View: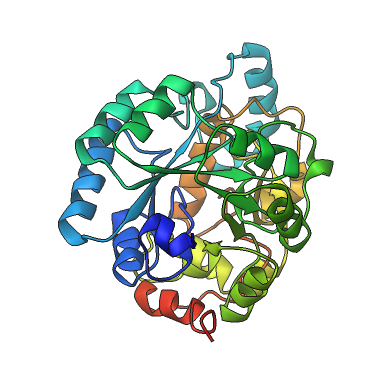
Length: 347
């Protein structure tokens, strides 16, 4: 069975869910163009999620994907938080921010029964997960309405584990990919490899369709991935300049600049390794730090710096998520880009 047959789509193009830079508009545009549009829900409250799902249902009859994180909530450490804020204190002083007024918060929600309740009202045809899978009971609820389940694997071991849990397809996330790494069996970053090294190994190891993700920026890249056994490709960064994206002006400027050629994995913005364009805070503190609170607790302390700097037109403290190949970013409608990405697949 092809990926198109499995998911009910025309083109084997999946728009990567990108929390913080998109809403339902991008998902609708990609789905209506024949690909699989995705709605990231990790940053959405229940009411916002319900509103976005209603908007999708109102604007397309095509299949779409909703995406959730399923990380284990960490225990709060006052000591780690104090060390982290001390590292950031010179920046608070520089930007005139009252550190004492900054509250702590969860940052990103993990998939839970309340989210499943909202989903059950809309019964999305595809549900995808990052950081493994939710508890068996929650997964059973998703499958009960016939949804296809996808999840990300960053190693062969993770792919085998996901197949054992019965996922319908696996997203092979190479090290080039922008945003958060999806690794869940090991935090050891030396296990993480590039897309075109990872993809054929996972294809050989599992029987379910494998979707390539990371560093694929144009139609030639899509064809290359398919030639290595991918059933389809998941593409994120290339969409970030499309008018349907909510990418900030600061972020858009970075993606269009020479700075986009230099990305790194960093845990400074959330507590988990994620790939973004190197900026001031990554350069000065180092992109990875053991002082940072566990994911996603790092977010609250750095968020005020981001907000203040962005209000002044600076991305010095912003998570400028981007894959290693931003060359495919185009300021064109997402539907046009989707068709361009699939242009050579069927030749």
